[in-house]
Length: 128
Length: 152
Image 1 (tube, rainbow over the protein chains, first blue to last red):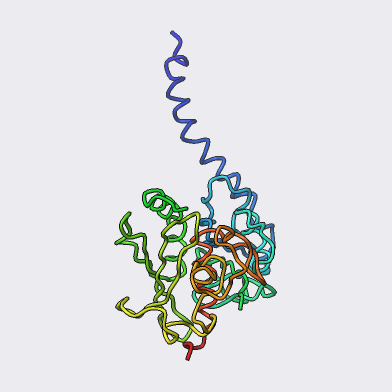
Image 2 (tube, one colour):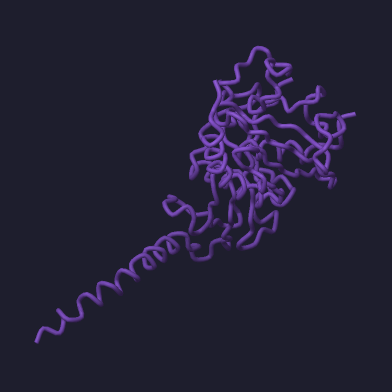
Protein backbone atom coordinates (compact mmCIF):
# COMPACT_ATOMS: atom_id res chain seq x y z
CA UNK A 1 0.00 0.00 0.00
CA UNK A 2 1.38 3.37 -0.99
CA UNK A 3 1.04 5.24 2.30
CA UNK A 4 3.23 8.08 1.03
CA UNK A 5 0.82 8.68 -1.82
CA UNK A 6 -2.08 8.94 0.62
CA UNK A 7 -0.33 11.53 2.78
CA UNK A 8 1.30 13.50 -0.02
CA UNK A 9 -1.51 16.08 -0.44
CA UNK A 10 -1.51 16.72 3.29
CA UNK A 11 2.25 17.10 3.33
CA UNK A 12 1.99 19.60 0.47
CA UNK A 13 -0.70 21.50 2.34
CA UNK A 14 1.50 21.65 5.40
CA UNK A 15 4.44 22.79 3.30
CA UNK A 16 2.22 25.45 1.77
CA UNK A 17 1.71 26.84 5.24
CA UNK A 18 5.26 26.36 6.24
CA UNK A 19 7.17 27.76 3.29
CA UNK A 20 6.25 31.46 3.64
CA UNK A 21 7.06 31.33 7.33
CA UNK A 22 10.43 29.73 6.67
CA UNK A 23 11.06 32.39 4.01
CA UNK A 24 10.17 35.06 6.55
CA UNK A 25 12.53 33.56 9.09
CA UNK A 26 15.25 33.49 6.45
CA UNK A 27 14.70 37.18 5.76
CA UNK A 28 14.80 37.93 9.46
CA UNK A 29 17.96 35.95 9.95
CA UNK A 30 19.64 38.03 7.26
CA UNK A 31 19.19 41.00 9.56
CA UNK A 32 20.33 39.27 12.74
CA UNK A 33 23.09 41.18 14.54
CA UNK A 34 26.57 39.89 14.05
CA UNK A 35 28.19 38.33 17.08
CA UNK A 36 29.24 41.18 19.34
CA UNK A 37 27.68 43.84 17.09
CA UNK A 38 25.45 46.65 18.32
CA UNK A 39 21.84 45.79 19.26
CA UNK A 40 19.22 46.17 16.57
CA UNK A 41 15.89 47.88 16.59
CA UNK A 42 12.86 47.22 14.43
CA UNK A 43 11.08 50.41 13.31
CA UNK A 44 7.85 51.25 11.50
CA UNK A 45 8.05 54.04 8.95
CA UNK A 46 4.85 55.64 7.68
CA UNK A 47 5.30 57.37 4.35
CA UNK A 48 2.80 59.12 2.06
CA UNK A 49 2.98 55.99 -0.11
CA UNK A 50 2.38 53.44 2.61
CA UNK A 51 3.79 51.80 5.71
CA UNK A 52 7.24 50.23 5.81
CA UNK A 53 7.56 47.54 8.48
CA UNK A 54 8.83 44.01 8.98
CA UNK A 55 5.88 42.75 6.96
CA UNK A 56 4.79 45.68 4.74
CA UNK A 57 4.96 46.18 1.86
CA UNK A 58 5.11 42.47 1.08
CA UNK A 59 7.56 42.90 -1.78
CA UNK A 60 10.00 45.24 -0.03
CA UNK A 61 13.64 44.41 -0.78
CA UNK A 62 14.69 45.43 2.73
CA UNK A 63 13.17 45.79 6.18
CA UNK A 64 13.51 48.62 8.74
CA UNK A 65 15.65 46.64 11.17
CA UNK A 66 18.80 48.55 12.06
CA UNK A 67 21.80 48.49 14.37
CA UNK A 68 21.18 51.31 16.81
CA UNK A 69 24.37 52.96 15.59
CA UNK A 70 22.71 53.64 12.19
CA UNK A 71 22.28 57.28 11.25
CA UNK A 72 18.77 58.60 10.69
CA UNK A 73 19.86 59.68 7.20
CA UNK A 74 20.34 56.03 6.23
CA UNK A 75 16.80 55.17 7.33
CA UNK A 76 15.49 58.05 5.18
CA UNK A 77 17.50 56.85 2.19
CA UNK A 78 16.19 53.30 2.58
CA UNK A 79 12.56 54.39 3.03
CA UNK A 80 12.80 56.52 -0.11
CA UNK A 81 14.22 53.54 -1.99
CA UNK A 82 11.50 51.14 -0.84
CA UNK A 83 8.74 53.52 -1.97
CA UNK A 84 10.66 54.94 -4.96
CA UNK A 85 10.62 58.54 -3.83
CA UNK A 86 12.93 59.51 -6.65
CA UNK A 87 11.65 63.05 -7.13
CA UNK A 88 14.46 65.51 -6.69
CA UNK A 89 14.08 68.86 -5.01
CA UNK A 90 11.86 67.78 -2.13
CA UNK A 91 13.09 67.57 1.45
CA UNK A 92 12.64 64.28 3.28
CA UNK A 93 12.46 64.34 7.04
CA UNK A 94 11.75 61.69 9.66
CA UNK A 95 9.39 62.75 12.42
CA UNK A 96 8.90 61.09 15.78
CA UNK A 97 5.64 62.54 17.04
CA UNK A 98 6.28 66.26 16.42
CA UNK A 99 10.08 66.06 16.62
CA UNK A 100 12.17 66.30 13.46
CA UNK A 101 15.00 63.79 13.65
CA UNK A 102 18.44 65.05 12.63
CA UNK A 103 19.73 62.93 9.76
CA UNK A 104 23.27 63.05 11.15
CA UNK A 105 22.32 61.61 14.52
CA UNK A 106 22.01 57.91 15.27
CA UNK A 107 18.95 55.85 16.18
CA UNK A 108 20.51 55.24 19.61
CA UNK A 109 20.76 58.96 20.33
CA UNK A 110 16.95 59.22 20.16
CA UNK A 111 16.44 56.12 22.34
CA UNK A 112 14.09 54.62 19.77
CA UNK A 113 12.81 51.20 20.82
CA UNK A 114 11.40 48.23 18.91
CA UNK A 115 8.15 49.04 17.16
CA UNK A 116 8.58 52.84 17.25
CA UNK A 117 6.48 54.51 14.57
CA UNK A 118 8.23 57.25 12.60
CA UNK A 119 6.75 59.40 9.84
CA UNK A 120 8.63 60.13 6.64
CA UNK A 121 7.51 63.60 5.69
CA UNK A 122 7.95 64.95 2.20
CA UNK A 123 8.23 68.71 1.89
CA UNK A 124 8.07 70.58 -1.40
CA UNK A 125 8.98 74.18 -2.13
CA UNK A 126 7.25 77.37 -1.16
CA UNK A 127 6.35 80.00 -3.73
CA UNK A 128 5.86 83.63 -2.80
CA UNK B 1 -13.33 71.27 -19.12
CA UNK B 2 -14.70 69.68 -15.99
CA UNK B 3 -14.47 66.23 -14.42
CA UNK B 4 -17.74 64.39 -13.66
CA UNK B 5 -18.36 64.36 -9.91
CA UNK B 6 -18.47 60.56 -9.83
CA UNK B 7 -15.04 60.33 -11.41
CA UNK B 8 -13.64 62.88 -8.98
CA UNK B 9 -15.16 61.04 -6.03
CA UNK B 10 -13.58 57.76 -7.09
CA UNK B 11 -10.18 59.41 -7.56
CA UNK B 12 -10.40 61.14 -4.18
CA UNK B 13 -11.42 57.96 -2.36
CA UNK B 14 -8.57 56.07 -3.99
CA UNK B 15 -6.05 58.76 -3.04
CA UNK B 16 -7.44 59.07 0.47
CA UNK B 17 -6.48 55.49 1.35
CA UNK B 18 -2.80 56.42 1.68
CA UNK B 19 -3.64 59.95 2.83
CA UNK B 20 -5.77 58.84 5.78
CA UNK B 21 -3.20 56.26 6.87
CA UNK B 22 -0.45 58.87 6.68
CA UNK B 23 -2.51 61.47 8.52
CA UNK B 24 -3.41 59.06 11.30
CA UNK B 25 0.24 58.15 11.83
CA UNK B 26 1.12 61.85 11.92
CA UNK B 27 -1.56 62.52 14.53
CA UNK B 28 -3.80 64.50 12.17
CA UNK B 29 -7.57 64.31 12.19
CA UNK B 30 -9.25 63.72 8.82
CA UNK B 31 -12.98 64.25 8.45
CA UNK B 32 -14.26 62.84 5.17
CA UNK B 33 -17.66 61.75 6.47
CA UNK B 34 -19.57 64.13 4.21
CA UNK B 35 -17.58 63.28 1.10
CA UNK B 36 -19.97 62.53 -1.75
CA UNK B 37 -20.66 63.40 -5.38
CA UNK B 38 -22.64 66.40 -4.15
CA UNK B 39 -19.90 67.51 -1.77
CA UNK B 40 -16.35 66.75 -2.87
CA UNK B 41 -14.95 68.15 0.36
CA UNK B 42 -12.96 66.82 3.28
CA UNK B 43 -11.30 68.52 6.23
CA UNK B 44 -8.05 68.06 8.11
CA UNK B 45 -7.00 69.50 11.45
CA UNK B 46 -3.31 70.41 11.60
CA UNK B 47 -1.41 71.45 14.70
CA UNK B 48 1.83 73.32 15.29
CA UNK B 49 4.36 72.49 18.01
CA UNK B 50 2.73 75.01 20.31
CA UNK B 51 -0.51 73.05 20.20
CA UNK B 52 -2.41 75.60 18.07
CA UNK B 53 -4.94 73.94 15.80
CA UNK B 54 -5.53 74.94 12.17
CA UNK B 55 -8.53 73.69 10.24
CA UNK B 56 -8.06 73.10 6.50
CA UNK B 57 -10.78 72.43 3.97
CA UNK B 58 -9.97 70.56 0.77
CA UNK B 59 -12.44 71.27 -2.04
CA UNK B 60 -11.68 68.64 -4.67
CA UNK B 61 -14.00 69.61 -7.50
CA UNK B 62 -12.46 68.56 -10.85
CA UNK B 63 -9.85 66.41 -9.09
CA UNK B 64 -7.57 64.91 -10.33
CA UNK B 65 -7.46 67.11 -13.45
CA UNK B 66 -7.23 70.10 -11.15
CA UNK B 67 -5.69 70.24 -7.67
CA UNK B 68 -7.85 70.82 -4.59
CA UNK B 69 -8.71 74.32 -3.45
CA UNK B 70 -7.28 74.49 0.07
CA UNK B 71 -8.63 77.01 2.51
CA UNK B 72 -8.20 77.42 6.25
CA UNK B 73 -11.43 77.81 8.19
CA UNK B 74 -12.47 78.32 11.78
CA UNK B 75 -13.30 75.29 13.94
CA UNK B 76 -16.99 75.55 13.03
CA UNK B 77 -16.12 75.79 9.31
CA UNK B 78 -18.16 78.95 9.01
CA UNK B 79 -15.44 81.57 8.49
CA UNK B 80 -12.83 80.88 5.84
CA UNK B 81 -9.96 82.51 4.01
CA UNK B 82 -9.13 85.01 6.75
CA UNK B 83 -5.54 85.80 7.67
CA UNK B 84 -5.84 84.83 11.32
CA UNK B 85 -7.05 81.35 10.32
CA UNK B 86 -3.71 80.67 8.60
CA UNK B 87 -0.46 79.48 10.17
CA UNK B 88 2.24 82.13 9.69
CA UNK B 89 4.31 79.94 7.37
CA UNK B 90 2.08 80.61 4.36
CA UNK B 91 1.67 83.52 1.95
CA UNK B 92 0.10 86.59 3.57
CA UNK B 93 -2.61 86.88 0.88
CA UNK B 94 -3.53 84.50 2.69
CA UNK B 95 -2.83 81.43 0.55
CA UNK B 96 -0.99 78.12 0.57
CA UNK B 97 1.18 79.11 -2.37
CA UNK B 98 1.83 75.74 -3.92
CA UNK B 99 0.93 74.30 -7.30
CA UNK B 100 -1.24 71.74 -5.47
CA UNK B 101 -3.61 74.51 -4.35
CA UNK B 102 -6.06 75.95 -6.89
CA UNK B 103 -6.37 79.10 -4.81
CA UNK B 104 -2.79 80.01 -5.72
CA UNK B 105 -3.61 80.27 -9.43
CA UNK B 106 -4.18 83.63 -11.06
CA UNK B 107 -7.41 82.45 -12.75
CA UNK B 108 -8.97 82.13 -9.28
CA UNK B 109 -7.58 85.41 -8.03
CA UNK B 110 -4.38 83.93 -6.65
CA UNK B 111 -0.94 85.44 -7.03
CA UNK B 112 0.38 83.03 -9.69
CA UNK B 113 -0.88 84.06 -13.10
CA UNK B 114 2.10 82.32 -14.67
CA UNK B 115 0.96 78.84 -13.58
CA UNK B 116 -1.49 76.69 -15.56
CA UNK B 117 -3.83 74.67 -13.38
CA UNK B 118 -3.41 71.51 -15.47
CA UNK B 119 0.31 71.58 -14.66
CA UNK B 120 -0.31 71.21 -10.93
CA UNK B 121 1.93 68.13 -10.69
CA UNK B 122 4.98 70.21 -11.61
CA UNK B 123 7.38 71.30 -8.85
CA UNK B 124 6.79 74.53 -6.99
CA UNK B 125 9.81 76.85 -6.67
CA UNK B 126 12.34 75.52 -4.21
CA UNK B 127 11.02 71.96 -4.19
CA UNK B 128 10.06 68.91 -6.18
CA UNK B 129 6.67 67.68 -7.38
CA UNK B 130 3.90 67.04 -4.84
CA UNK B 131 1.45 64.82 -6.68
CA UNK B 132 -0.96 63.05 -4.31
CA UNK B 133 -3.28 64.01 -1.46
CA UNK B 134 -1.00 62.15 0.97
CA UNK B 135 2.01 64.16 -0.22
CA UNK B 136 0.02 67.40 0.03
CA UNK B 137 -0.91 66.56 3.61
CA UNK B 138 2.70 65.64 4.35
CA UNK B 139 3.97 68.95 2.97
CA UNK B 140 1.41 71.00 4.86
CA UNK B 141 1.95 69.03 8.08
CA UNK B 142 5.69 69.71 8.06
CA UNK B 143 5.16 73.41 7.38
CA UNK B 144 2.40 73.89 9.94
CA UNK B 145 4.51 72.17 12.60
CA UNK B 146 7.14 74.87 12.04
CA UNK B 147 4.69 77.74 12.37
CA UNK B 148 4.97 79.91 15.43
CA UNK B 149 1.49 81.39 15.30
CA UNK B 150 -1.03 82.91 12.93
CA UNK B 151 -0.81 85.43 10.11
CA UNK B 152 -1.65 88.84 11.53
